[in-house]
Length: 379
Image 1 (cartoon, rainbow, N blue to C red):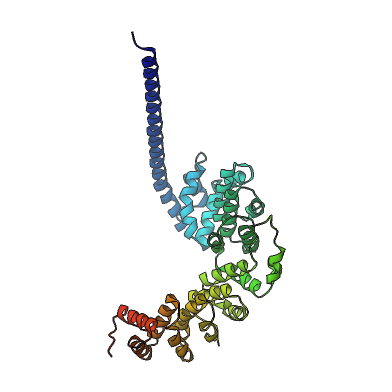
Image 2 (tube, rainbow, N blue to C red):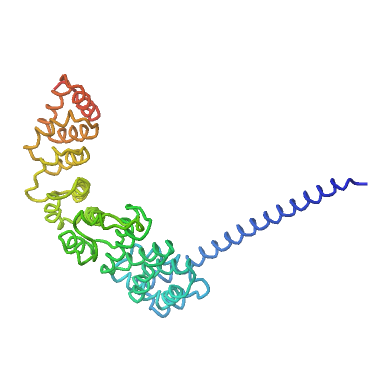
């Protein structure tokens, strides 16, 4: 007779074995279904691609293309097919693609999901309709910026950014910076999707037209107005920093006069953002005097100023670069030495002289830069 405890143990082992086998069956079945689904999509994609390219080239009219591509049961397949094209197309090809998406009810389907879908469905719909630049959905996406669900806020913000409606830039900026937990870099990345067309609005804001973003004060006194219950409320200078970075990202040289005026009164952090923008644009404003920033008390400002010197080539700043070879910060010394090297033979002579001198820091960085550039210490 089997011991009762042993019998219970065997039952437990058997039950666990059954559970494990069932889990393995579920996993295998799921992987098979996913693989089969992907295979079906790849087959559909190849079929649709032929019709779609013929449609873009004019060999197929809208009605026939729609009839050949339409798949009412799998709108997510249609989105996966058109999504990569929408990211790169513009002009007439984009307009034709949008017309086709409307004809096959892709736009209508996701507009309905944006209004009445689950949180996940609304988020997907916002991204899809933004990529399709669906103007009819802008009002709904703006309302989603007030959602308590961060997924919806992010999707709505990105959808609005891709929609091409630059007038939504400031509502999105304010939501991302004030009312969400997105990092500064994450917010900037989303706002970059607006493209260069939003740059004139950013310049106007930097020039003092704060009505574009109501409630954001221009001075430091606004810091005292923050509520303890609103810890995410950002300093007003964050808006300026984001816009300066975006102007640099877009290489918007038309902003140079505004940045030139702004840097004269800016705090050190904003100065750094402006210097970075100059580097991104590859140009400095007319009559820009770099010397005050090469002598700035903050090393980060001195560091980026040394890099910006390469854009100016101002010979009057050479003595300051020479002095920075002995700066207490290694990066300042390095970029000053790199700037002197870019000055050609006169700069290399300064580096050679410093490399053989008695100032330890200046000698070390001069030798290092000359060595990594393959220049002998002896002329």
